[in-house]
Length: 160
Image (cartoon, rainbow, N blue to C red; front, top):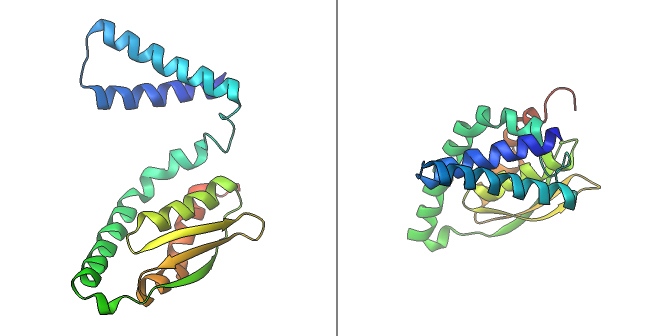
């Protein structure tokens, strides 16, 4: 029941932010839509710890500014490659992740993909390895640095 309430609150908050319409009827229909979607998700069994990782969602604002900065820096690097295609040196690297949960491992892979110039190609949950395609040597080397891994592990929290 707690997962349904949290999911409904999150969906309703997103609906409120995106809709821009705040009449009584639409507020009611928006809430009923969020509740309905949460009930369907609960019936499907996707509101478990992997589908709604609360420990990650609660700590996410802490790393948001850092992630935005990383995205901006990577954008600059991609622009340099676009302007001078000879800089491109595509390669694949295997990144060893230290996350303890599947949600943490997938979050790490998503953070890698969010930064331009890198794409997570495969995630091996058994070995905690993320296969990454890097546009240049610098992008590939940046994936191997421990900072992103440490920040995502921080999202999982100390109890993991």
